Image (cartoon, rainbow, N blue to C red):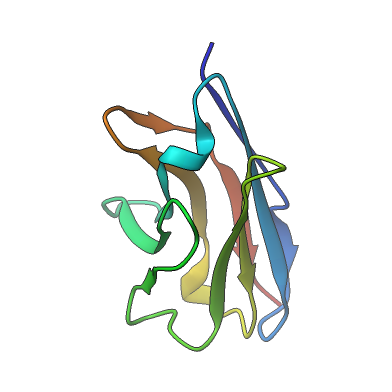
Length: 115
């Protein structure tokens, strides 16, 4: 059974930091590109960051470049999203995605940036 389980979300003040984690099971993690998406209320889901299967390639949305860092540990079957300098507009549900031959989604974790 394929599972992507996100954790690490929460409430943080503007300028603060959070690290999201996504643990994968049920598929060959090292063969999948991994991404983080987010969806704010009333908005479409958008790509935040992506990383290649071996971790050598990364890409970021312009809105998070220089603030967020995506990484992965294939031995732990885990992908991370380090988020620094958080802004209120980063408030959203953050989803983990695995894509190769198949496309898998996690259930999401809420990130709220507010004073």
